[in-house]
Structure formats: C-alpha cells, structure tokens
Figure 1 (tube, rainbow, N blue to C red):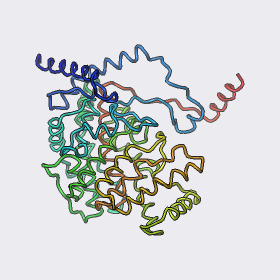
Figure 2: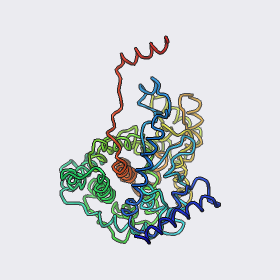
Figure 3: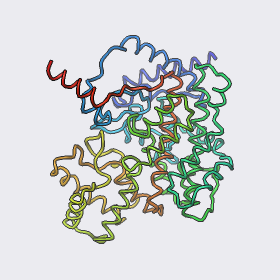
Figure 4: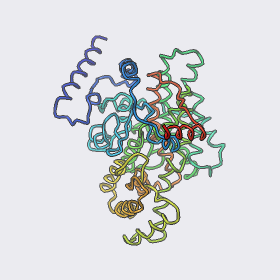
Amino acid sequence: MAFFRSVTALSKLRSRLGQQSSLTDSVRWLQTQTSSDLDLHSQLKELIPEQQERLKKLKADHGKVQLGTITADMVIGGMRGMTGLLWLGSLLDPDEGIRFRGMSIPECQKVLPGAKPGGEPLPEGLLWLLLTGKVPSKEQVDALSNELRSRAKVPDYVFKAIDALPVGAHPMTQFTTGVMALQVQSEFQKAYDKGIPKSKYWEPTYEDSLSLIAQVPVVASYVYRRIYKGGNIIPVDDSLDYGANFAHMLGFGDYKMQELMRLYVTIHSDHEGGNVSAHTGHLVASALSDPYLSFAAALNGLAGPLHGLANQEVLLWIKSVVDECGENITTEQLKDYVWTTLNSGKVVPGFGHGVLRKTDPRYTCQREFALKHLPDDPLFQLVSKLYDVVPPILTKLGKVKNPWPNVDAHSGVLLNHFGLTEARYFTVLFGVSRSIGIGCQLIWDRALGLPLERPKSVTMESLESYCKKAASS
C-alpha cells in the first residue's frame, strides 16, 4: 500500500511538472498522469473518493451560482441550450467541437495508443480516458482489451430472443432486443435486490457497464450476419482488439477496415450529455435502472431519424444523386440537385448540427482517413464536392445556423468503400460506439450519487400567463 501511495504521489508530481512544461495548454494535467497499475477497476477505486469530495465541495461552495437564463423559447424548443446536466466524459464546444476529457480528436489521435505506431486510436484507450481522465499506456490498453474479450461471451437466450423477430425487422430493433435480453445477467439488479449500500452502487454498475461494452459488438455482429449473410456467424478472435474484432465478426478482415472501425468507434463513443441517446441513458439510469435497461432506452432514441438514423439517410441520399446524375456529376448539376432536394421540403442529410457552428471535427478526421486510404473512391469525391457546394446554398437560404457537414456526412461512404454497404445497419454501428460513453457516465453517476432527474414542466396556459406578467412588469 505504501508503494501504491508513492506511485500515486509521483504521478501527481509529474502531472504538475508537466503542466508547467511545453505540453500544449489543452492537454490538462489530469490526462497526463501515469500509473503502473494495469487494472481499470483499481484506478477507479482510487479516483472516486477524490471526485466525490470535489463534487461535494462544488455544491457547498457554488451551489447557488446561476448558469444562465431560461427563456420561453427554450421551454418550447425542447430545452435547447439549457445547461442542466453533469457529464464527465466530454464537452461539446460550438466552435471547437467535441473534447474528450479536455482533449480534441486530433490530440486523442496523437496520444492514445494504436494497434501499430501511427495508427488510429484503440477504442479501449478512449474508454480508459473517459473513465479516469488519464491517457493510458499501451500496456494498460492491452490489459483492458484482454478484460473486454473475457467478458464478451453472450448467453444463447440472447440470440434466441433476436431469432424470435422477423429477419426483416430493422437492425436497430433486433439490436435493442438483444441488449434487453442481456439484462437478465445484470449484476446491479442482483446487488440491489440483496440490499447493497448506496456507496457501493458504482461497483456492480462497473461490472454491468464493462460487460455491456464487451458484449454489444457480439450482439450487433450477430444481427448483421443474421440479416445480410444468411446467419453465418463469426466468433470472437482472441488475438484482436475491440475495433478489429468488431470488423472481424462482421466479416471484414482488411486491415484498413479494422483501422476504420477503431476510428469510427472512438469518435462516435461520446458527444456530451445533451444529445438524445446520451441524455436518455442518463435519465433512465437516474431511476436506478441498470445499465442494460438504460442503454436499451438510449438505443431507442438513437434509432430516430433526427439522431442516429441520419447516417443511414446520408448514404441513401448520396446514392440517389449517383443514380440520377451519375458518378461524374458536375458542380452545377450537384447544385441543381441540392436545390431540388431543398425545394421539395426535404433537408440535405449530413449538414447542420444542433450545437456546432463549424465543420464537425469528426467529419474532418474521417476526411483525412479517406484522403489517406481511398482518395480515388467516387463517393468520397462526391462528398468532397458536397462540402464545396452545400454550405453556400444553405447560407443563402438564411435559415440554417450551421451549414457545415457533421459526422454523418462522411461515415457512410467510408463503410461503403470497404464493403459494408447496408445503410439500414449503420445506426447499429453508432450504437455499439455509444455504449462506451454512456457506460462510463453511468459508472460515474452511481459513484457520485447523482439524483433522480426530475425537471419541472409547465402548461401552455401557465407559460402564457407568466410571459404576460413578465412583459407588463
């Protein structure tokens, strides 16, 4: 124990010295801590008491500080722009985009371990970062990979539950059904039924969340192989990491596809707490529903066309452009097609974002991947043309706050290039990725004892009355 405390003290000293060195300002001391401990659970046992005290002090010292003004527009407009959730893993800046524990996507690509030097970051590394705030070593990531593989066995009844559905059911319906069936094994539910003290809630939640993260690629690949490959199932490969194993179980052995899946899962894993899927998972879990129930609810939100289903819509729309105008479409033809889409009352999928006001960094890193691995792909070249054509048109309309492409504008063409052409399945990939961010937050929700979420609603009459009184005063 003395040695462990010494290592911890040395880590903190190194981090403070590092903060004063030439490290970039955006890489906080918390992320640059190091530790020789390879076990993620023991890292959390050390961190949680510190963060509990931090939250307690924050509430005591600053609990009455106002964070903004709520307007009637916000109440009517789906609470858009209200600051009302605590989310540890990531923060979305309107101009800079997503930051994971303070780190941008390019910074994560630089410092998180890859399967090979210079490769895309391993999702296990981001999982470690989201949970601990520390950049893991390659050895820690490898240990976590081994642990996730050991948790990846899925009971037969889960597959039977999926098989009870028609093969033609939407992939998200089948995926969510599988996740619900996994709930039977919930360690949190068992512990709660036995009367576990509230201070220990995080431990069975940790067990459930890591098992859930480990198992969802197996369930998701089963759904894919069932629908599109005649039920020919591919088992886990014990030599592969999380992202590569997912590609392998789907049926793709190309190393570039494995790299794409590592990148895809990493950048889609978390996007702060206000989006539908993340918020839903947090909301349902606040009622002490276990991680399986909470994540299944999150998936049902992700399945909506205004959220995760958008990545499916983008590729279908791009293919409709090719079907009507051909692969060698001119800029003028593309402008005409975009205007036709808009004038018909539809939107151009893949452009705009509820928070971002610049090009999504997740779009940018996927574009860089394409320039590196598939620069001559016709659909990628079409996506590049859309980047030049669509924003000026949307700006001219004057109704769009953000005319720039989002993450969904690019992911489909990359998957399509490597043979994953089934657009209806794309949201399942998003769901697998999102298990990491939601799972990490659920652990911290329990560790910090965050309460039942219960915002106040108002009727139309009471809102009208309040606004009239405010206007006359």
